[in-house]
Image (cartoon, rainbow, N blue to C red; front, top):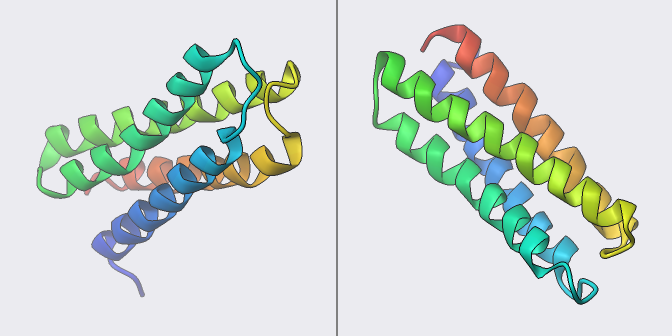
Length: 116
């Protein structure tokens, strides 16, 4: 059976992959939406950074950083969906990043509920 630390490491790796997929999805985005592209990338980068920081924390402080990571993953996902909805980025390229952010959210949620 995997330990909570193993799950945190898996979530961190998945968050890193979601960040990379987000950067790839927004590459070559349509002009005029740079602020939303920037927001998607900043939110996606916040997820692995806050997960990594949570590993060095305990108790409520650890949960706090995981909550921030969870919210950032949701934010990155919605920013990508918005960009797809206005055809500023290709939906097929964004699909992988969106799915990864969904998985990251599910993993972080379980980590937050484990109280570890």
